[in-house]
Length: 336
Ligand SMILES: NC(=O)c1ccc[n+]([C@@H]2O[C@H](COP(=O)([O-])OP(=O)(O)OC[C@H]3O[C@@H](n4cnc5c(N)ncnc54)[C@H](OP(=O)(O)O)[C@@H]3O)[C@@H](O)[C@H]2O)c1
Image (cartoon, rainbow, N blue to C red):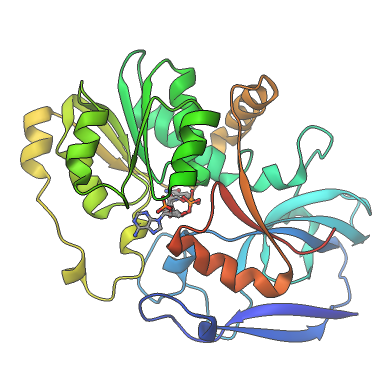
C-alpha cells in the first residue's frame, strides 16, 4: 500500500512558502508487534510549528530537513498488532504528516466519537482548548466583573479563552482581524466588545474605548503592537498569560520586533506577565478535558473550525494561519 508524506525540504526564511515543503510517496511499512496502523482523518496545522521549522533553540526540538513533519492527528486504526487497540478505534496523537502512520499503540490515545465530533479532539477538546483553559485559569485567574482582553480572539485558543472568561463572570473583549470574525465573536459567542485591529486607525484608542475600566487580564496570543497597546492599559495587579507571539514568528531580524519596554508598567501596576507551554500542565489534562467536555455538553462553550479538504492542501492550510484565513481551529480533512 502506498503512503503519501509531507517532508520539510528547507527551513523557511521569513514567511514560509510552498517551496519549503515536498510531497513524497513511499510504501506503508509492515507493522511490528505492539504497533497499529492509523489512517489519518483530520490533521491539525498550528502556528507553533513555524518555530520548529528553524534551528533556533526552543522548547521543542526543530524538525529535521528531509524528514516527515509531525503534528496532532485524529485517525482510525486500520490494522492492529496490539491488544490495546482494535481495528476501527479512533485515536489521536502526535504523528507524521502522512496518510498512514505505523506507531506503537501506547503513543496514541483512544477518543470517543460518540461524545463529540472527531475533529473536536484537535480543537476545543484538544491542545488548543487545554491551552486556553490553563493559561486563563492558572495564570489569568479572571474574577467576576473584571475585564479580560484576548488577542487572536477568533482563533482556536482565543475563542475558548473568551468563553471560559465569560463562564467566570468576566467582561470579555476580543481583538481579531476581520469583520466576519468580529461578527462571530459578538453575535455567536457573546463577547462584550471587540476591536478589529486591521480596520481601526489606532488600536490603543479603540481598545481603551472597549475597556472603559482598564484591563485586568490580557491573554496574549499575538505579541507585537497589539500587545503593546493592551499592556499600556493594564489595571493594578493585572495578569498577562503569554501564550503566543504569532506576529513575530516570521521575522528575520529582532530589529523588526521592538516596542516599549514593559518593566516600568509592570512595576507601576504590579502586574504579572508569565509565559507558559501547555505541556507544562500535562498531569492535569484529564480534569481540564473533563471540564471542557462538560461546558461543551452544557452549551456554555461553542466552537468553530476551518476545515480544508485534501492532503494536498496541508501546506496551504498551514500558511493560511499567518494570513488569518482561519476562524477557530484550522484543520485538514484527509479522509472520511
Ligand atoms: N503556549 C502554548 O502552549 C501554546 C499552545 C497553542 C498555541 N499557542 C499560541 O497561541 C496562539 C494562537 O494559536 P492558535 O492555534 O489558536 O492559532 P489561531 O489563533 O487559530 O490562528 C492564528 C491566528 O493568528 C492571527 N494572526 C496571524 N498573524 C498575525 C499577526 N501578525 N498579528 C496578529 N494576529 C495575527 C490570525 O487571526 P486574525 O485574523 O485575527 O489576525 C490567525 O487566524 C499562537 O501564537 C500559538 O503559537 C501557544
